[in-house]
Length: 130
Image 1: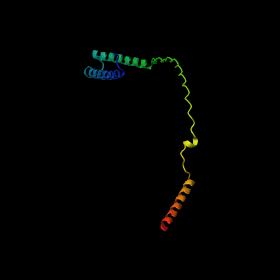
Image 2 (image 1 turned 90 degrees about the horizontal axis):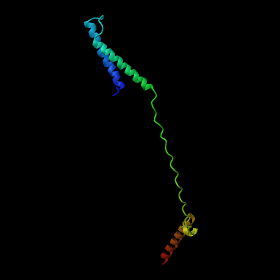
Image 3 (image 1 turned 180 degrees about the vertical axis):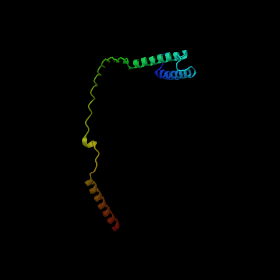
């Protein structure tokens, strides 16, 4: 299983801390002139390998990625045209005046109201005489 980038960086940091500890302990116990111990050499080699792996992954990440092929859609066959509908039967023409309901105009309403008032006055006079 390939190692992820984040774990490589983390491993390099941990390796560096262990290497530093090994170097400090060697310097304190044996002095600066002593050659590195086997543990230090192993840690240095591991660190070198981790850095190479990281560099290889970073170089690979910069390479162009393979692109997905474009989907080619098949053209659908054209639909058959629908048969034309038969013409509708002609309707009988309606009489224009008969179709409309009679709506009295404003003037007709005023005249009718005036007639009604006048008839009411005459009716009241007649009833008073008798």
